[in-house]
Image (tube, rainbow, N blue to C red; front, side, top):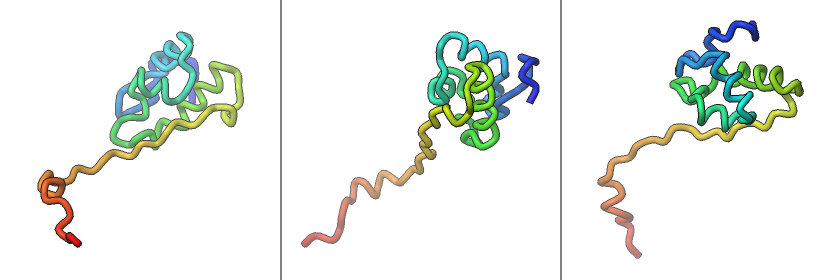
Amino acid sequence: MNLKDDNTIVCRCADVTLGEIKNVIRKGYTTLDEIKRLTRAGMGQCQGKTCRNLLMQIIAHELKISQTDIELSRLRPPSVTIPLELLVKGDTNED
């Protein structure tokens, strides 16, 4: 990845650019979780499958550290809705 062109799209789902990521890192936000919360990178439809490694490369490059030194973000899979009816009825197997 070209880490010089700030207009390069890093997260296609949320349309986040390299420049936006760099600006957040330079403000002191250096973890994947912080960057995700501030830029929405990695929170789109793919849930970071396409941009997570790119984010780690950028963080490592900007902080001049190894990617292995970067704390991984917490994975929170999307929740699945359930019908309210299931909650209201409760357990029908009463002892």
